[in-house]
Length: 68
View 1 (cartoon, rainbow, N blue to C red):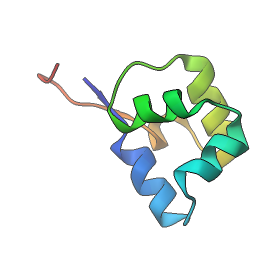
View 2: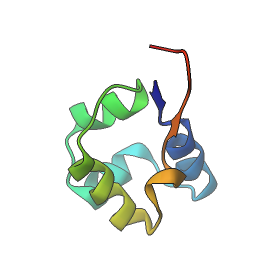
View 3: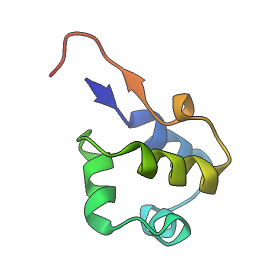
């Protein structure tokens, strides 16, 4: 399973609200909801978030073995 908890922590650390990230990236609120619930998002979304936050994909997500 892919977890986006690292993204949530990064936003907290940088004091960026989820709605601010939506505006910075141009992603939809529905896509932000998917990130919040560890659902599939495209690499295009990951790319936009990485560009907006000036980070690497590994800073946003991690693979957790055995969970589905």
